[in-house]
Image 1 (tube, one colour):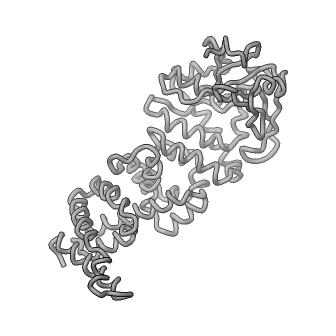
Image 2 (cartoon, one colour):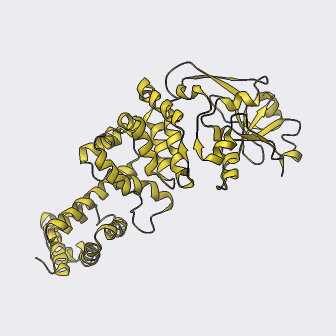
Amino acid sequence: MTRSCDPAVTGLSVYRVGGAVRDARLGWPVTDTDWVVVGATPEALRRRGFRPVGRDFPVFLHPETHEEYALARTERKAGHGYTGFVVHASPEVTLEEDLARRDLTINAMAETPQGELVDPYGGLADLATRVLRHVSPAFVEDPLRVLRTARFLARYAGLGFTIAEETRELMRQLVQSGELGHLVAERVWVETEKALAEPWPEVYFQALDDCGALAVLMPALAADGEALDEALGRLHRLPEEEEGEALPRWRWARLVEHLDEAERAELAEQLRLPRAYVELARQVSLTRALIAASRRSPLGGGDILAWLDGIDAWRRGERVMPLIRLVSREAPGLAEELALGWRLAAQVLPKTLVEEGFRGGELGQELARRRREAIGAALGVA
């Protein structure tokens, strides 16, 4: 159904805006389409069957397509952080005024349902020259724009995009103003998690580091520049087949694997990390330590058993092979030893020992001894 013959919007001034306009012109996949309605009221949209969903400003879902339609609005800074704005939506707000409040010029383009471009701030030219540039000086009013700009760079860096120097300067100003400190942890993590799923996540952290934001938001990562560079280089060295929903978790785990337990815990608290991210980071850190130990001296059965215990392999066996595939990226020979040791140790079952009469603490001790022995036999060591 085209908008020109859509009865829900017939007679309304509607414009496709934002990402759909930008990505269609880049040849990038368009996943969501948002619309702005100019000259209308909330009551007019409700009468046409639109369902209101916006809490802070008037956003509605189309009765059939469920795409988002927002009334044209302006924003005025009235407090700290990305929520410190007073929103004004009325039929008098023009499309150009609505687009002016957006962060980057490439996100401030619109088009009619027939595909006619409306580009008052030069977004198309910046797409052509591959530049991420702020729309107006009001960029500095919203600290979240520092993270969003870095995230868009993580998406499009491979296409040759860079951040305009004047925009980088505004990002630095936002950091120096202290506004970043008013961002809630959950919102910082939302942007970071999205960036971890982008094609070039390393440039997200590089951009934040360059403007000083990383030291404010993730100080443990920013503390050692050389270690950060090494960590960013690991973001594409992941276990084979680890894609889709698991990809951001693996990238985060590789990013923080060099941090000690206290540093990772502090970072997890600062960002309110989901448990799945915290746990995988711990497993990958233990695996990093095992690889390092193997390079200092040959591993024994006890070393590998301790690693398997540490990752809770006996209850969560599905964790083992992805971590072994990760080891294969760094130490292929060790990965083969781990796979063989795991296979043999997993064959030592508590049920068998119970049938032999072991109980209580003796059962646990004997189970560990036999598993260690099985691993040692696989490695040809004691």
